[in-house]
Image 1 (spheres, rainbow, N blue to C red):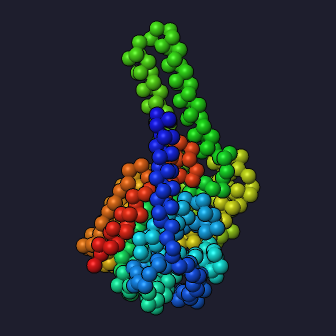
Image 2: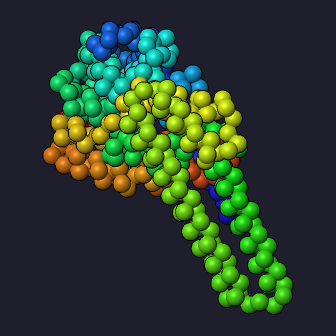
Image 3: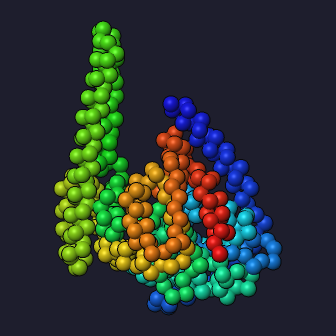
Length: 392
């Protein structure tokens, strides 16, 4: 099976490589600067225009919350770069807006609320309306993760985009999305966290069960007996994993509730520090500090109070919802269902689900085979282009 997955991943990489070569057009690239009405913050962006006279359809790309614009190997950047390359090669202009505090843009991302991000996106949209090479009737926004929710917020405002493409958007309230993520502050905990140790123990238990099954076969146990033993061990492990996941979610939900109910950062951070140390006795002091500071930033607090349902009814432009079925960051079944419920009054909503793709529309089979970076789906960019061109 592993050989098959590895071969599949290699084939996907070759296909992706071929796709990437085809997607590198002779385009025109220029830096742009604009001012957001939310605080008068100056923002930078990179505008890529196809060759030819136009007018071209155009999209603004909005990243996931906390995406590092300076890390080209991050999953979010790989997704947005793949989209940009493909769409430009297919005759669309693409504006990659730099978030506050990144890429030379003013402000700080840690203090930026979702409403401010939405205002920034609309300012970028207004900028595109001033460009004569662009088709003002086909200017849209493509967002990933929180960026997708920002795009939907923009879609509910006056002078909204002509369309919105939401990649892995949340339909649940922000606090629920964060509480149910694998580890909502995991990038600060390193590889020595209690949760990582549990994952390693699961693997050791599985290996021990396979070894015991081999002994049973050697000692004369029949196939049915061996299979019954293995099924029992796997069921026991599944139950343990579910208990651990429920415990983690309960702990994370309790931490988020502390943040929500404690406006004073110093007080909230003191309580959160104790909670982290109790669950993770070996956590480094620097990791504790980084975690509690993240949880109490204005941007994080803003997301905790965010409920997508409040604005979805106001989105009247066409919307395309895309999700990977293997998304562990935003549960696809739950969140897409809620998004469609909130958008039920909009007759121009389409949905696309991709089996075997994660939050960033990467092939999970390639990740399992150890491929880094894992390739982005070659289907999603083409589907997005087809849907955009089909909008009237």
